[in-house]
Amino acid sequence: MIWKLALHWQVFIGMIAGAAVALLAPDLAPAAATLGTIFMRLLRMVIVPLIFTSIVSGVAGIGDPRSLGRLGAKTLAYYLCTSLFAILVGLVLANGIRPGAQLHPPEGVVISPDQIERPGSLAEILIRMIPENPIQAASEGDILGLIFFALAFGLAIMFLPERGRTFLTEAFQTAFEAMMKLTGGLIRLAPLGVLGLIAGAISTMGFGVFAQVAKYMLTVALGLSFHFFVVLPALYFLLTRRSPVAHWRAMVAPMQLAFSTSSSSATLPVTMNTVERKAGVSNKVASFVLPLGATVNMDGTALYECAGVLFIAQALDVGLTVGQQAMVVLTALLASIGAAGIPSAGLVMIFIVLEAVNLSNPAAFALVGVMLAVDRPLDMFRTMVNVTSDTVGAAVIAQSEGETLRYDDS
Ligand code: ASP
Image 1 (cartoon, rainbow, N blue to C red):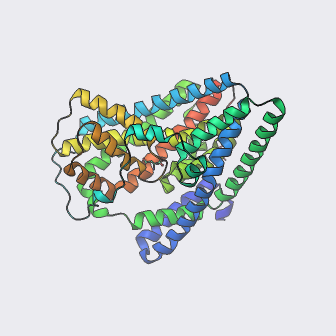
Image 2 (cartoon, rainbow, N blue to C red):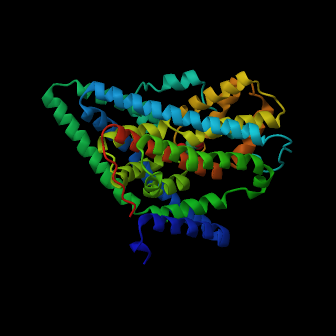
Image 3 (cartoon, rainbow, N blue to C red):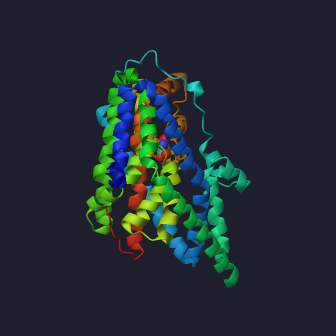
């Protein structure tokens, strides 16, 4: 019986069924896609309270500002290093393969770049991290702003007198546990949700354009695969001295969900649940490292920004100097940090990187339109890489804090 199988097998069957519906019975795809929409809404429903309660209880529960500083420094160091690694992979591949050289601009199914909302400048993004009104930040899905406020609030609780501190820490801890229970319930719906998401994604893909930019798509896919199968496992092994196989096997559920939803934020509830239950990472580490990671640590996106801009430059026959390529590396890193954990956010941030190397012109924007037309499969893949890197970070940091990882891949 399907419902007796382990959840990741059920989700896998959901993925295949979704693809089958889209390809064999396209008339049913819109109805199936509704299942996906409902599932996405349920996941989104828990994101804001989950992030808020987890960070506040995580920070307040650490108890000592120095431990918080240590944990924060390790987390940021890991996130910056892995994203930088990913960008370098993208840089080497895009220079080696030159996916944009001799590109014949595809005709027809190009999405007008005017339809894409532009991000603000990098300075604006950094300033906007400080929310003028935390409630508005939460209601508008401004996750960076929400995280900033939650960190500050958790820190303030740490400095309260004993009685108030214990009361608030326990209250937020209990609220967080309730959110995790809710998440546990939602996860059971994942097979159906994934069926709908995959059916919807495949039925709206414009396969016609794929062939024309195949080299670009292959370059990005190759880079993401290298990061996913080589760089991250090697890093995991070096930092924990354990076999990465157990970790990768235990993390199948968040990987599948990241792939199906193209959203690190929507996957976050499942990522937290799985990292705690299947890798034995403490709540203290998971509740601090993972919400931050889902918003800030995007290796796949970082790789994509870099490869994407080089692709555009090559297609326009603009040679980028070494200095300009270094600028691409730096801005790709910042753009990946600023990108929200939602579908196609990475593509939108590419405007920032283009600007940094003076490629803000209509021809470049038209190519962004082409990239948008084929973005969905790449987004699925890069989101999976983003989330996997967060889980590796949680495991590595937990072990460095003296915890013993205990894997359960049932
Ligand atoms: N969809 C990605 C994520 O949520 C962001 C991106 O578009 O690169 O992680």
